[in-house]
Amino acid sequence: MVLFGDYPTKRHLPIDYHEKKLENPFYRRRERIISLAGVKGKLILSASAIFLLFIIWLIFISPFWGIRNIALNGVDQASAADIRDLIGAQLQTRSFLILPQSNLLFFSEKKIAAVLRSKYHFQQIIIKKNWPNSLSVTIVNKPLICVWNEGDKYYYADTDGYAVEEINPLDLKNNKYPLLVNNSSLRMYGNRIAVDPSYLNFTAALYDKFSQAALGIDLDHFIVDDEVDTVKLATKEGLTIDFNTKDDIDKQLSNLSILKNQKLKDQFAKEKMIDLRFGDKIYYQ
Image (cartoon, rainbow, N blue to C red; front, side):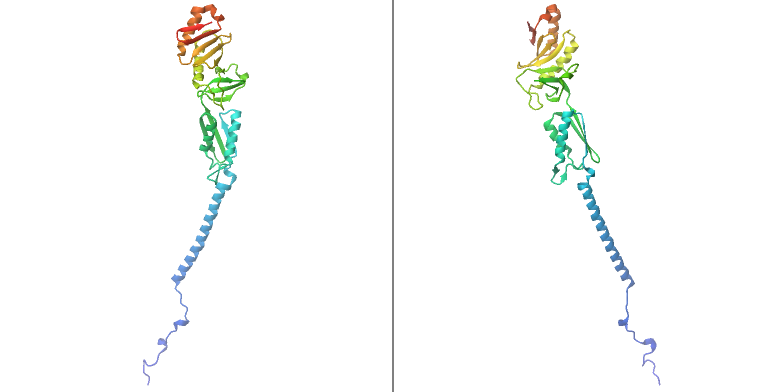
């Protein structure tokens, strides 16, 4: 007699799961994604490091930004040579110990401008970086007003009393600026004229107004000496006319015209000295 349920049938045989290798397909997929992300991260990190090293090389080491051309405008040859030397000296230095001044990226315009201002009396200094490796320096001088003669040297002088540029004596003929000869005991120091700039500016104004007055007097040059508030006009005939730098130029020229054309007339050419420094009191001999 067979009793159902007492013996296991094939359908109900037990299964041994220890011998099976079970895998979660979703878990494997996650492992694969994490592995790929790690490789990609390493590649990105390596590429970033290489790029950073390239940037450092390009900025600090590469000769691409090295200053090789320096253009100077508005200066004479002597000053240009000196300015190039000053710029060259700065190119040999570094800012903050690591930033090479020879690199256009780090070159300090303010620093070289300060150096130039300490040595020269320029009205304006314009420094421009022309990428990738050129530098241009444009100098604007203060207005020139006269030619200053001291000893055997001649210089163009500006409104502030600085000698801007030495001039060849052969170029004095037909020069548009008045010639002012220094017969005083004061002497230049550096490019600074020791005489007060007011004498130079008075001379320039007197030169313009004297030319316009058409007095029929052949002007040769002007003189400054140790006499206070005095500029002397020397004619080609040897006459010396003293002017007061503190008094009105038009008034003094008017007195000179009256003396020449109304009082002395033909005798004017015989005079050797005329002094206009004391208002309407005119001294001559």
